[in-house]
Length: 247
Image 1 (tube, one colour):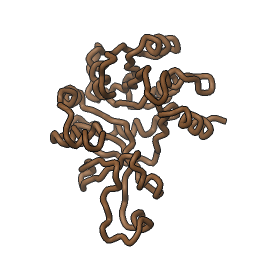
Image 2 (cartoon, rainbow, N blue to C red):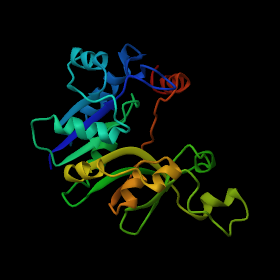
Image 3 (spheres, rainbow, N blue to C red):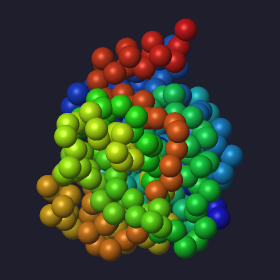
């Protein structure tokens, strides 16, 4: 399987404008994401898909590959498809790598790539939840899996709800819950199809794009990882992540 890693990177951000270019210990955020992603051995190529010439030129200056995409895309998935369409080589799969995780490890990318066998339509990462703060945080999407290792549903709520639990303290002792890690793999023909789908009712309800795919009958393979996500949505997030990973 030939796999293309794409890092969508918008310049505008409501909570953190120009965060792709913010300096983190002498390197920009997008350079750190690019360099970490390029260490994944299963990716044949890594490119940045951006909507701004400042990011495009910056990536090319540090030796990376980047393509310009429309500023009108509503999601990273749509941006990935345009970037794929602009490549000259054939790829079987695309892995969408979040552009705001400067310390992403290459191992979960390779782990996700390991299930891309030609039959897998879509795939994503999940992590077993081990603390109540994450389990009951409505800003953290959760996933429920079936016996085949596919996602049945995503929700911001705690799912499944344990009806017979006497208190929230019993949840983690009684069931295995999964946090969704937002890295996606798309078979390229499926990527072309899902970008044409209208916004679905479940997607509107939960504000989770991946529910559109489930609602339209696509199968999403779940890959369980021990690596967590460390996304940067705000300057406070940047301070927290920098303290964690840089001396």
